[in-house]
Image (cartoon, rainbow, N blue to C red; front, side, top):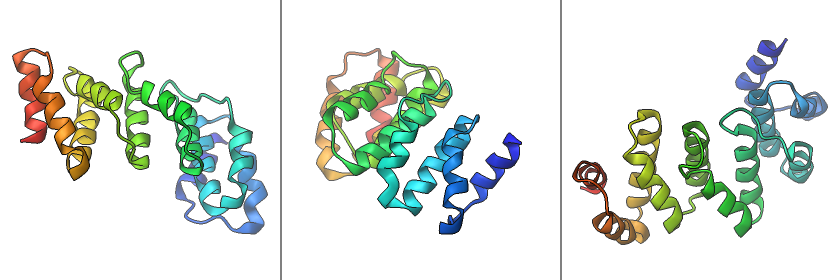
Amino acid sequence: DVLVRKGIMSNTKTIEPSLMGDYEALLKDSSYTTIVTALEKLCSAFPANTKRYLAATKGIEGTNGRNVLIKWLEISLSEKDDAAMMNQLVAYTSDSYEFITRTNAMGAIRRLNHFDDKLLANCMNACVSSNGRLASPAADAIRYYYAQDKYKRQIAERIAAANVSARDKEVLNKLIN
């Protein structure tokens, strides 16, 4: 049953090597949530097999939030720096995508601690959204990067130069003041 598999995956802390094959089978599960969890936990438990796990899940997009693809990109980028993959992940934070994809991508990029001007622009755009489930994670991301000295100036300058409404300017200024 899918709920049993999801429950097992969400409650698994460590994977015993003797059960590795059983967990690897979950990379092809019918539940995208189970696939994401299995991918993450298998790569963590057996890092020597990460390339194999990534190959097994390549091309799976996942839910409407592209959960499998974004986790796949995150793990791939943690293994190897790849500008094209990072650009793709940053693109998922843009307003070309629905809010779940955007928030998933912001979370992955934050865990990778990547920052660039395009990400900042996308996060600023999301911060002023009327969708609180998008605006809140975007604001958290900007605050996270602003707390790092190397990004403070860039963020402050970009917010000061933003050509937005007075209301949006107030929202953005509250992030850094």
